[in-house]
Image (cartoon, rainbow, N blue to C red; front, side, top):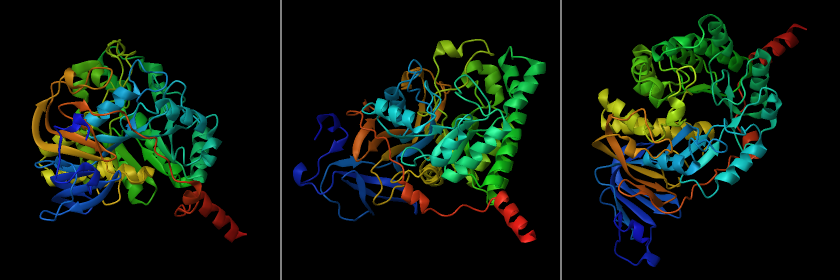
Length: 494
């Protein structure tokens, strides 16, 4: 046994080479798709081999004591910017993936706005090769949707990517922006043909340009939210709903910030359109009052909005209207963030803080711990795994990948800069008192992170393969689109 793990794992009876299990995670509160219960997880060959009930006989093998903790599936953050390649002065893949582990996250999906941007499969493969051997977590990528070449989406190899990010408004690191209506419609049509899910930064650049023509740049942080108001997001979401209805395109709207967007997207999903949405930890944690008071640390895109918006977003998270919560982990250096309000880049580090901030928020709202654990496993487990086809991820069930996060549900602690694993070295949550803390994280059946030691062992995160094209071709047929119905009516009238 690795001597580094001796204080974490105790030997059981039987010699290691004759052990029946590679690891036995004993005596925790298991958060499974069927419910939350006491039990033990048996791991063999990097997979969950059994979920045992109290009193069941245990196999021999190394033990990991999980008493008093929730045993969650390794969490998924489907929205991170680990800044590789080209922006490594803000974050490296090693530091970003260490921050993920510290937050209970074992799988991430990285965004395409790097230098160069990931706008085709060749750049995604090159990015995977660059990261190989440097990641502590498993990973997959969202490709960038290119407004000049939307046709690429129709033939995207699902083994490389099944989703593509489209920016409808620009900011400091947005590589390309869909400014023209015909470009956006072409992307929706091509993505529908290729069975690609569009993930969208849904704010309307034309709205912002119009407002800028009269108002100019903000000179203080209390003017920032009015400078990038909800109207830009509401207009963009209305366009997205229309295009999804027209073409049948699968759509996931990122970092929803306002009550009005939430209402539109929830209504569209209830209608049966293939639309889902994400809420970020920071939109659940902060309001525009924080931005006015604290300045650049919560200068974000989309902007942090009013208390009533935060409460509507919490309602969406707890009701199941929101499919995922994500961090939008987007670190910048302190020097970059301290530029004047008009120049400071939007974004904050968040992959480490996401799950504990959501957990703390749920308990503060009176959610009991078992229910909160089930919500967390849905929003950062089953939800993103199903949405993006992450096989073996997001569920604590027999046969799944042996990725596990142990959460001490009642630990009270205050976050300081010394806790931050991200290269940027700061957090918008500095000074916050959190309830809940991850104590041990297992990836592929091996302890990868421990609260007292940090990362354990070498980076062994994998680039996750997507489904083969044959499997995608045999997936469920798309719902008929408005254009399909128009053509049927035209034919019937002839």
